[in-house]
Image (cartoon, rainbow, N blue to C red; front, side, top):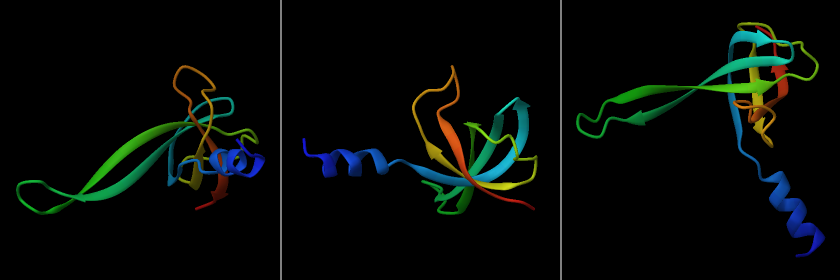
Length: 89
């Protein structure tokens, strides 16, 4: 495997945007993401929410902040994401 293909694979991590809904400890937050999908029977667009446990290395995110998170290696039993960027609200 060449070095460029290994680098591209590493940089192709999932990225999500969401709102911090809980400060669950030191350097840990819970981020609620949202996506919209069509109901399979009725056709109405419904909002689907999912919570992600994320690592906040700088410990700067507060409840209500809009953040961008990126997939990473497992950091604990539930944490699989880390905060990349914070936009304060």
